[in-house]
Image (cartoon, rainbow, N blue to C red; front, top):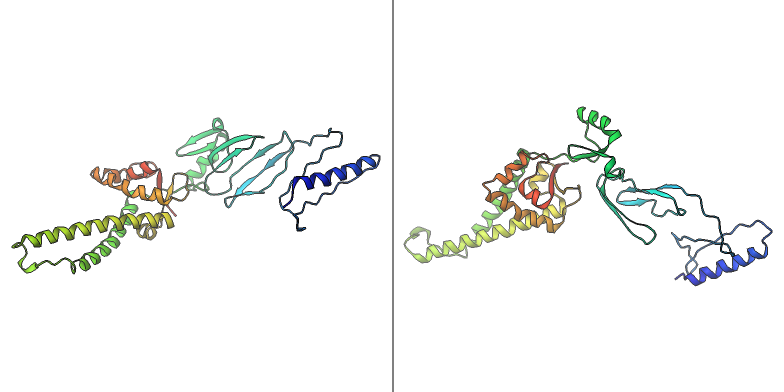
Length: 295
């Protein structure tokens, strides 16, 4: 483990040598190593004159990009008074925080360059810099989607995906129902003559309904949390994402599944909303702040 004391000792000694030879030009070379002699990556060393005075570095304009969900470069040394920008080259939005005493700041979710809000102009669901708006609108007229833009899935393609999922779950449910009939003894030939047969049938249907509830919730929660899509949506090349384009968590996926019941209880109006909304959001998408997009 490298200690501050050992570094300070090296610099103090070197500073003393330089003071003794103050009339000569000198170059200070510092090698920061661990206790076993290996170079320490990412180390930053500051050097001050023995008199306590020093020439401040010239301010610079630095850039730290965000590529593949990582800062590039991951380490930048800049003098006091410098400026630094954090463009986002990724196709998903990022949010940056700094809790450092030197400079505390926060950049809300953004893509590209984080322009100040007063420099952005709204165009549909997108925010573009005012100077870029003419070129942006021209590209839209030409049918070119902006980089990273989400293509929202319409009502009918989502309806097809629901049908595919429904068929898959129906097959699983019927297999379970057939197996369950082995354990529920019902005299189908004389059904209706015995109250016991009716109670057995009600119990069977109750177990079947509970099974379907658990399986459908587990299926959708796991598939969307793991892959971003159910089998039906995979077949239709659709994805379920958060409003900023990021992956949906398992918790939100579970909440979205049960929010679908609200879309059904409104006489399916919650589903029909997807055909009328600008971002093709159903009621459960609005509740959970999710979007269904095309790959």
